[in-house]
Length: 210
Length: 63
Image 1 (cartoon, one colour):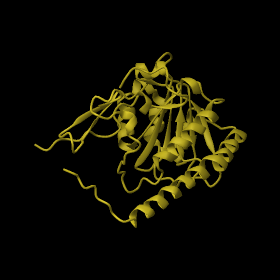
Image 2 (cartoon, rainbow over the protein chains, first blue to last red):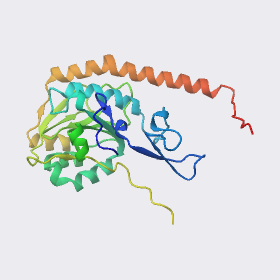
Image 3 (cartoon, each protein chain N blue to C red):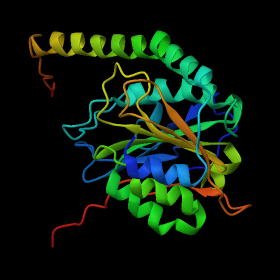
Image 4 (cartoon, chains in turn green, blue):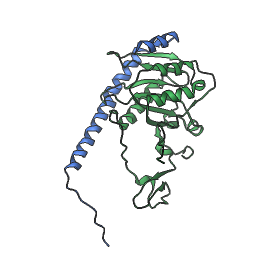
């Protein structure tokens, strides 16, 4: 991915930071590199949409995460330390609970005992949407300001599909098992001056058949 | 929230989130985000149904 582009629109998605995509194109087998300059004959801007097959149990669509995470950023402004709208990059992806726990174990010293302990005790669905909020500066350093974990099996009618939202200092745990809206705020007591790193790999890499 | 997590959070000084903030979040999500999401899903389902029953056209390459 490119360095953060200054012309990124307010509350930009990470797709605005793409430099190129490797695509399988029947007319240019086996692979083609599609960039913004159009060296492949067409360019990134020519792609309007693409289809991503998701596992059966994911009922909360990506477009819902897009809308939900935008309003959540606005609402969290009074509760957490988040980048301003004009300097915000949002990245969202689906992952599994086991991948999230593996990430937490590997980054235990960075995340701190409270957050790691809570993630290990969190009883979520198998699939989780993760939203990462970064400023341009943090994006370039591979860091995030805050993360939200959403229930990928939630109904699109659910107004609060979040399991957990956290920034560098605090976390909010939403009680999804309760019939009334309830949430708990906890001080993460993380090591001071330690930034939150981006979760680079959300799914297990495909192992090629030999 | 399951008991093990609740106990763990309580042992680390967790406190209930301001009910007014939480209520505001739920109301804003319910009044703006959820209707937009549902409308978008309906729109896509309508498009999918339209495409499913539309006559298939295949591009014929002119030599």
